[in-house]
Image 1: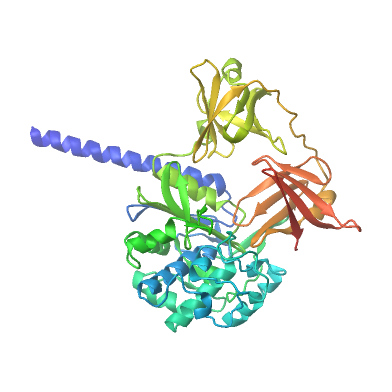
Image 2: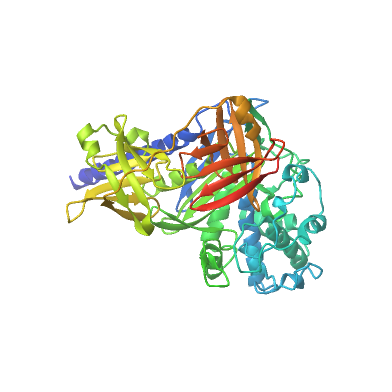
Length: 550
């Protein structure tokens, strides 16, 4: 009898675990489908791993539009800036071998590099605090990207540019710094950067599908890169693979990237103490903490600590996330920047640790009285005021700002509401004094107390013709290595910042636009002849001018 009971328990446990696995797989499928639901469009491959083993592998869309080839998990993609973690670990490997110090001045390895009398160290290159101008912000990047250059020619291209700030005084994401790290690797090791990565990382880890990018080599399962334009998709702009170098030239697959992450987690290449320097951020000269370490950035997701990096290059968008305590790794590789792979990986990671973001499928129906009970103004930390109001049968939220943008919020229960961006929520309740309070939830929580305050007028949108909107189409430089692409489709206009998802803009008048996904305002500026030359971004109380570069 005892044997039968034990057998029943084992069978029941197996069935329960199987049901859980199926439910999690369905959650993953639903998340991917939110962003990649067109099987005839460029797509992506994604992988979720737990305890070093893949629990989900998915390929969606097309790897080649011209040949009508479906994506497969084995497809090879440009990693773009995810390359930087390989470069950083290579430097740390050389440090452990005693061949360099992170405090070494870069002139120890590149004696003729002009430092303008400043001491620029290897550390400054690793965490983007060198002040060196990023070469991707010099001139027209799409024209520069077509030119094959030797590594020394590439360094010559930017080395005489004035510095943006003194070393260690500020942080500015910088591709030039990682090109210089590639040069240092070559000087110290006596190998080319490509050979060093292959000999000391790819081959030892069995990353057989990974290599330095090449247009001439036959690369099995290569996914072709695409860009989205007003009339559909086009082949991505040409990029000489000599240009991204140690800042973004490596290619890989989701399976090989899991081997890489396992090597980091298991201290296969560098010691645990060395890895800590890469994943725990760093400091400026004044002691201010920045969340970028060496080739990786700090991450907090639903209260879980980890590290991450994304990548964006012509026709490619990538993102990787690792949550330390849960030992969960998520990697997403896409052959088009037209979908937000970062949101996909973030939502997959949250689901994998049992803290999924809600979706529209979770929305419930509430009556008018249930909705109106939370109407009012709420003041949060730092003086931020958000208004909750009832309109057109639904609750809406507006933060007082330059834009006064209105957001729809959707009920998940009587006191819990989510935004369209399901990573943001409200949770309402009554405080001890009987007044309403609202908890604004992102990766952290902020409590807002109800106050007596009139709601300012919301931003109103108008419709403009394609003839008016098309003059704004193009690329604008908002900061070094940080551009915004404005795309017009019919009578709709969209913005997409470097390594971020595309979002719509809405016209207030012929030159002023605002977003609904985040409180910002964009005003396009014209020269005396009426040609658009820049836009001014109003966000968070600041004004920033973005020059039109394409």
